[in-house]
Image (tube, rainbow over all chains, first blue to last red; front, side):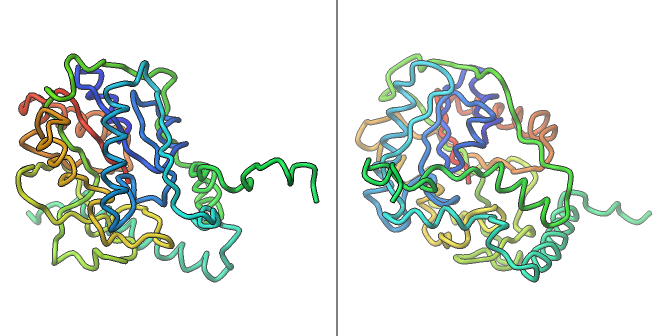
Length: 126
Length: 179
């Protein structure tokens, strides 16, 4: 998404990225970024919470119109939870057993093969 | 008790998740030694809005995918489902509702289920912003952006296609919601 924002911006369209992965978006470098410190998949607000969603989009619009320079990041003041321990779970190898790691490796290989087959359909038989 | 305990500081883990480090360590431990190379630039472009937002046509860009009943579990609460991925930019009409899912993306499955599309596809909210005059109008189409692992494909194929579609709709600004 960051690459798409950059490409549109380079071609005259003002952009704003809404996202939850602060380091990834900032490492790429985008014109304007509204960061929500929420689990990945919730860049537009809290699930089933219309007020949170309305607040988040309004903040995004304000960043879109008011950012003074590229690489402007605004962090939403909304909190996912008063307890920050959810942040320790995502892809945290220190929290996985040897058995879980083995299962995840098998699953990763399986999903990668599925994706490859969609991306590169087999050539039609002659 | 340490010297910092009464200064009101947040716990040290209460900071944005260092995803790049996490994911590097994760795949290394899974047995994939070649680290993913994240897109990275020293500079970023900047196009100031040329008119008030209340006069702008705004497009919504998403990485979510249209629900395809034949492609397995797509949630809510679905495990990662590569079969639901898409590899070409797609578009939909902004004036009608759509059933978009995120089972093909690396969302945080421990802490979110993907049951409320408004948390990743704020089209209804954007329409409300247009209805009250906060933005000029919602662009006639929203666009789906593939999440291809190949940066080259993204840069050389998908980005130009997205731009062409935005130009066709003569959009002034775009909101891109990442997952």
